[in-house]
Length: 466
Image (cartoon, rainbow, N blue to C red; front, side, top):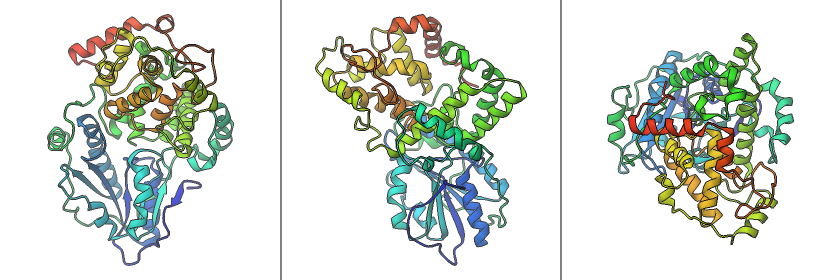
């Protein structure tokens, strides 16, 4: 647990308590979860059982059927695996704003300590800042999102080339399976009265009962849960890892892992993925360096930025050259200009861009290479740079299963120069990297991709669905 555990308040462990509480905010899984294992460690030391609490409220920004469905689909897997280990499990679905909003605090009142997830964005970051001072019991945040813990890097890294050697030095220490401790005191109490039982059959009914946006339908491609995540991983190992290095930037080849939604919602850990890839590559005499670079170096560079940046949704932490070039080109003419609504509805003149936006609308994820092009064109078609940034973030917050994630924020800000270098000066973009339709056409099979998304839109049949 070195460098993974952070105490969030000055409160002490409560005596005469009933359990240790693990509050699963982001790492919603029973496997390869350092936070859960730390809760079990505390429980064993105190002679107490462990209760895992997972909640889902109707009040988070852009709450909708897609996001709700994906989260709830993970509940049965988590509950089954935890109960096999003797950990208690309670899931609360706050359907309406008028429903109780104090369930967590009632659980805290009977707990010896609270353990939760250390995560630098979205609700978890806000909760970890505001809640510990209110609960009066020792509260710990544990980093189980990164392989090399975020707190190993105390300053913001400039780019991949600066963090890569530091990760390489630490990786032998941290690239090992998370401990799986045996729980000495099994959970034997009844489930709390608020617990909502989830089955595969009742998920649509549960989602429909919530006061959320019902216009954003569940993903055509992705189903939530650790079992679905592991199926994705197995498929990637067997079908795509050997060709990943050459085909990853060709969307029509389907050579990427498509694990970003599962990593974001914690249904699988990057550590579990990395170990599986490393073992498979060794067994089959493959080179997996390109994939591990993305999974470890690039992803953890994003977490480093998200943890240490002053404004994850703004330009304030961009390199000086990027902010200066935007200032210099702020008055450049944009022609054509599209409204946010036109872009959201994929109504531009560019068939490739329209397909990328439709992929977001239908699947809840854009292929990583084309997402760069998607973002660059939004800059070109927006009235201001701020309008472009707000639209990119807003569309991901509403539609993307991997939105609100450190990777998402940094990938969007990359379009404005983050973790990149200055290029040749040009209108609108200044020194920021430019990406053109002709370049995409030359480098990738855009027609195959456009046809695939059109087929998905017309039929609902998705080759990405496993």
